[in-house]
Structure formats: structure tokens, C-alpha cells
Length: 496
Picture 1 (cartoon, rainbow, N blue to C red):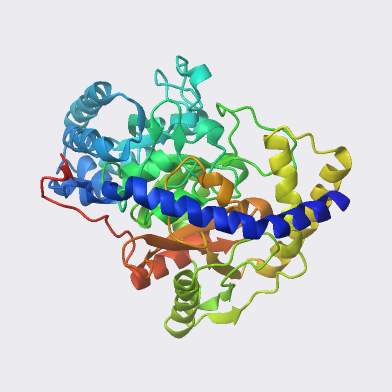
Picture 2 (cartoon, helix red, strand yellow):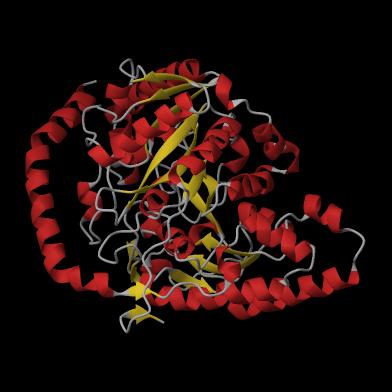
């Protein structure tokens, strides 16, 4: 109790100073990086790059496209986009093309089992990108820190193995923040990964490399990890869909990083990032196993029977207030679900019983991460607080409700090495699902009021109720329009 109160008081006292420092940081960043805005990607010319993974997989199986054509298109785009966004730690373009040719040869030889392939190898011939810490055999496996820069994976991680067994072809591993700890992707191996909507802005973290390639149309589906917002934040900054599941089968057992093994700490899970909402269920069906039948479960969801709770901002001590533009997106989504789909909408979900104590738990977790040696009494109190919070949240949501809230309280912040120091209160939003051990789907909600930077909301459902948040996300795709590409150019300032 005492440690928690001290942490809360410290945040309150430091908030004005941090605000002033943030303004100074923004002014310096504007002066030093403003010219980066002129650097833009050329638009993707190959139509393959703008099709969903579902569509590409069907066309490969039906032989309307070859796997080699698909892999080659994304490999070429990766080379081009990486010149701007700086997202790739290691690549296997030539090996991937050889894998693709083997797929095409096998398809030409077997003309009778196309329907069977849909069930057994739903990702057959698709190019995928993978967050570096997920482990791709033969690729760098460094945690994006210099001390491990020569380390390579001796085997595929469990999630990568599932994708490969389903027919996917990894083409590159992507950048993260060091040890996947920070909400801004910058490391000593390759430097900062930038945001193609505005290269002077952060792409988020820790899965920033995946986000940068996906929104640049250099990848169609990506595998990432999330412990406390590592999928949520980059998707919010890059107009992408992402999903953090509370499914036990997605908990990472073979991360590069050495994490606390306390079973009550927030788990690191693998999850999909993609441009098209329908590709979430395609990826989750593979990652969770064919027995999950997630696609069938989503199809059977009656959205009109759901209760929709929404909160425009968290309001707990230590969290940042959400921008008006983000709050408007949350309200618009709730109203749309009520008026168009007949949901019962209930504003300002009652989180008062437990949301103010989020700070205690999060400070305890940070103490463990940064080796500040939180005492056992603090850990015990944090476990008790979180256990009660999880119970209350599960009672609130049951199996008949979802909760809408901001994925992040504002658009992408300035890209510089101080970023994570000023974004602690904002990450409470991104860590919401991890803290309460529930499932969350990030839904891109077009742009902020400048019409320049993406923002997003998240749809939260109970643990093991992924079907609900994905079904609602598919409805909201029609409201917000899904992925909005970054501004392209064909001028001399383009990256080509």
C-alpha cells in the first residue's frame, strides 16, 4: 500500500515537469527532424501488394497466382520500403524465393487436393514477416541489443513453426526496441524505425518493425508479441489491425528475452498484425490450432445481442487524458453499434472499483523489468489487486459484452530516444488487455484532426471470447474504412 501511494504521489508531482520537458522535446524534434516529412514512399504498383492474405492464399491454391510471384512482390517492396522505414534486422529473400518455387512445383504436381490444402495449409505460399524475438531458424535472434548481435536462431520458435507448417514463407525478421521493453522502436543495431505517415514520428513499439513494413504494403501479415502493448501501440500508430489474445496456447515459451517467470505477471503472447480485418482470424486459426474453429465461432456471433460498454479515457491516476479526436472515435463506434446493429450501449463502464489501482501493479511490473528490486510485500499487494481486478472485469464482460476504449490516447509521438520516458501514462491504455488478462482487437479509426496521423480504438472481450471482439471489429471496419495507406509521392523526394 505504502509503495503504491508513493508511486502515485511521485507521478502527480512530476507530471508538470514532464509536461514542460515534453514541450521542449517536441520543439527540438520539430527543428531537427522536420525535413524528414518530405521523404515519402512511391505507391505500390503491383496489385498483389494490396490484396488480403485470404485473397492471396486462395489465388495461390487455385493457381491464379504463383507463390513465387507473391513472395517476389513482397521481397521487392521490402527492399524499397526499408530505405525509408528502416525496419528489417535480417532477411532471407533468396531462400524465400526457393521455398516459393518448391510450393509451386508441388501445386502443379498435385491437382486433386486443393480443398484439403485449404484446411491443412491455409497460408500456403504466402510471404510473412516476423518480429525478431519470435525466432526464425538461421535468422538473427539478438533481442535487438548489441551484446547479442552475432546470435542466430538455431530453430524456429513455436509460433513461427505453426506458420511454416501452415505453408507460410518467412521473408524477413523485423526490428524491436531493446529487449522489447519500450513503446518506441529504436536500437543500437540499426537505429530508429520510422513511421511512413510522418518519418519524424515514432512507429511505436516494441513491434515497430512489423508495423512499418505492413503499413508500407511491404508485408501482408506479420507475427508479433505483446506483453503490455507491444502490438497495440504500433497498430494504433500505423492504421493496422492487431489482436492480443488471452488464449493460453499463445503464451510465448521461447522468447529471446528472459522474462519474470511468476505465473501471475502479465504474460507475453504472440499475435497477428495485418492490414485487413479478415486476416486476423486466418492467423489466429493457425496459431491457436485447427481445433479452435475460430472462423466458425465468429460467423455465429449475433452482434445485435451484445452489450457495448465504452469509456473515452481511463481516468486513473497516472494515465494520460485522451485527445478529443480519439474520444470522438470511441463515441462514434459505440453509437454506430447501437444505431446500426442494435447493440445495447452503456457509456462510462464502471471501472472505478479497480482502475485507480492499475498504477500499483504497473509500477511493480516496471520495478521487476528494470531490476529495481520491488519488495515481496509490494509484489503480494500487486498480485492481490490484479486478481480482484481480473475477477471484476470478467464479471462485467461475461460472454455477452464488449468494451470500447482508446488503443492509445493520441496519435504517434515524436521519434527520438527520450520518447518512452514521456509516454508511461499513455501506455496504460495499450496495456489494458494484458493487465486484466482479456482479449483485445485494435481497430484503425482513420486519422486525427490533422488528417495526417492514424489513431485507433480497441475492442475488448473476455478471456477466451476472441470471437466477440473480432466480430465487432469486422463491423467497425465498415464504419472507419480499415487500413488507410500512408501518403505516397512520385516526386524526387520519394524513396525508390
